[in-house]
Image (tube, rainbow, N blue to C red):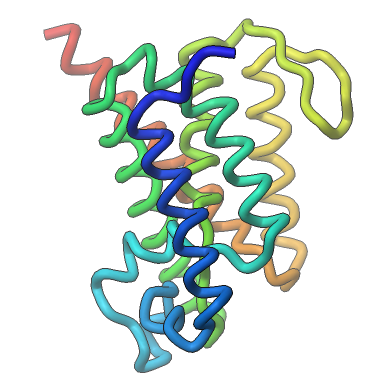
Length: 192
């Protein structure tokens, strides 16, 4: 197993470390969650800080697993600088889409998790390696990366339109949007 690249490792360690800290002192987490604009609890740093927080051990585990699976290879291909840019673009776009959604829905619930960034990495992986065969945990059926990304994106849209589930489906889609726009920008810059 190849070593985990430095930015991926730092992100994973920060997420795990903060989860442990806030598990021991849960009252400290609130100001770092992404609160809706109308809640009166929103602060600008939350556009980034929410991505380092997680609601449960399983939430943390699956986000870190996905970060390791997709992020490690992307960081090796792009290098630390570009990889950090895609993480930031996905995190910020996920936060902005989630803020718009919670504003329109009148929600006052905060958002936490690296899932928006992870969905941005998932889309990036599908764009860079569209024909790579991957086997998801569920269902364990081999499929091309582009098919996997399309299925997950479609499911997020359907689940998001389906109603309240406590999962920030539109933040996930926002993360995919941010990654897509940044990759399109990078590709457009190379043609000039």
